[in-house]
Image (cartoon, rainbow, N blue to C red; front, side, top):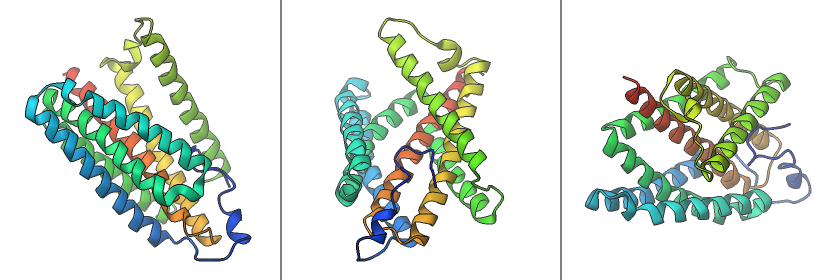
Length: 246
């Protein structure tokens, strides 16, 4: 059983066969995901209002950078110490909220209404992929997994190359710009992120069926939040490119 989401390694469930105690449930993951979303909205509201007061990106940049760095560190801690998830997953949500609120406010200043559109598309995609998964329209086969894994890894590599080149003043406008190829690339990334949601659903469902330990509810919600944050940011980028290309 394998997931393309790097936060969901292959050996999550075996501990429950050794240790007693409460077991993971799908309902528990849903509840904890809702808590995580509320935590994201709480800190996102702070950086959003802070930017609104000044209209200056510099006012929220330290909060955004700090949130992104802390979120990254917490995500690594959660991946390598899954039993810490009841603590690190909520903290991750709070940290990511600082970044999301700031970046959303900056996008909103340049593209009025874009945040509402991106949020609607994100949650619309979440529910659409969930229905497709539950209805059996999308089946998580080994071939499906390999394709999503390869695509996700390729996107990560492209972004990494882009970051490295930016240090030398070299841009990748044909990918990150608002031209036709850049728009197609963003559509592709959104699609891959959406399929990662399906992988997450499948992993969580199987974890519940196999009797994963209770703390894995927080771990499952953390994994979903990682994918949802990625999907939301990609929708912001895609919508911005579409408006620039008018």
